[in-house]
Every structure is written in structure tokens, then in C-alpha cells.
Length: 241
Image 1 (cartoon, rainbow, N blue to C red):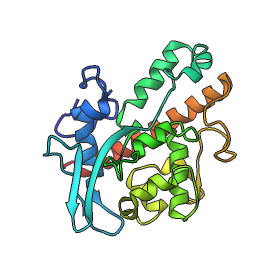
Image 2 (image 1 turned 90 degrees about the vertical axis):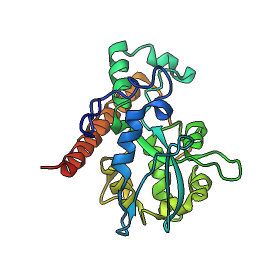
Image 3 (image 1 turned 135 degrees about the vertical axis):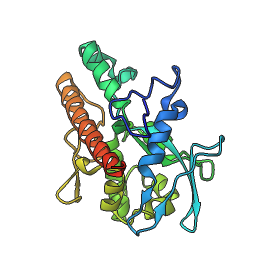
């Protein structure tokens, strides 16, 4: 739980959401997001997140602009996806449960713009519904990388709807460092460290076999643990002596 406003990287955010969606109902997750992502932007200006409006999740308004933000779970074990049932049923339940638990620690969450533009899907909605992404954060991050390069991707139109938000981070490196996503990148931020071999967005984003799923699970877990460690180090730096 939250103690002295410190972040517990082992905390399962399902615990305080009473069986509901933690991204909406976990007060602890919300407090973690507010603390983690209220900080200096690459341009040196402070991006403060406000949560005093009960009708909004997190909110910012300044000369930087006006931004509405919400939480999104970025790690998925696919245990409830019908297309994955034939694979998931071959994985020991204990392994799935552990994977699921880790996905609900703070390292498995991020914030994205939540306001709908022209009644079109938000980032959260589009990345989950787009069959070329299937909610994978590594594929989402590749789309963000391509956005900063001015190149096409399955999420190009969606990201561009929130152009002012993504410009806050100046470039792909700035975005990854701000949200502690460094371990999903390679070669000085020039590549994404994919969970599965990537041959372009035309290939199936879901694991095609038990072996592929186990590799996908392994790399996700490694990423969550590394990101949680980054979060803990950042949090400790801010603690009073």
C-alpha cells in the first residue's frame, strides 16, 4: 500500500479497485501516476498533473496546453482472448497468474491522452482494438517511434490527434526517458526491443505457439521488472533524507 507517499513496486493495483478496472478505480495507481509523471519535461518546464476534479482522472493546464490523461495497462497476458485460448490452456495456471500479477504492478501501467477528438478513438481504445497492435506496448512504442520520424504506422492518425501532447517530449528518446521505457529500446533509441520477432505490421501480433507465448511472457516479465526497478530508483531519489 501507499506509505509516506512512497511507491511500492510490488503492489497489485487490483487490491483497492474492488473487482473493477484498476485503471479507473484504483486510487493507489492514480496516486502513483500523479507522482511519477509530474516532473520536468525535456524542455525544462514542469508538467504538473492535477487530480482534484472528480470527473477527470489526471489533468494539466498551463501555457504548455491543456491535457486530459488516463491510466492504461500496457502488459497483457491474453488469458481472456478467445483467439489465444488454445495456447493459454497449455500454460500452467500459476505462470499465467504470476504474469497477470506483474502486469498489475506500477511497471505495467502508463498514461495516455484520454479526451476523444472528433468522436474518434483514444490511444487506449485504438491500440486495444487495432488488429495490428493487439494492445502490445512494444508495437505501440514502434508506432510512437515512427511518429517522431514522420513515418507511417497503424497508429499514425491516432497519435497525430494528440500531436501537442507527444511534442511535449520533443523526440522518441525524450518520450522513452520520461516514461522509463528505456528497456524497450535498442541502439541509442533507434530501435524497439520487441517481445517477439518483428517483420512489420502485416504479421500476426499475437504469439502463434506455446513456444512463442513463453518467449513473449519471458520478455514482458523482464521488461516489467526492469521498469519497476527504474521506478523505485527514481522514487528513492525524491525521498527526504
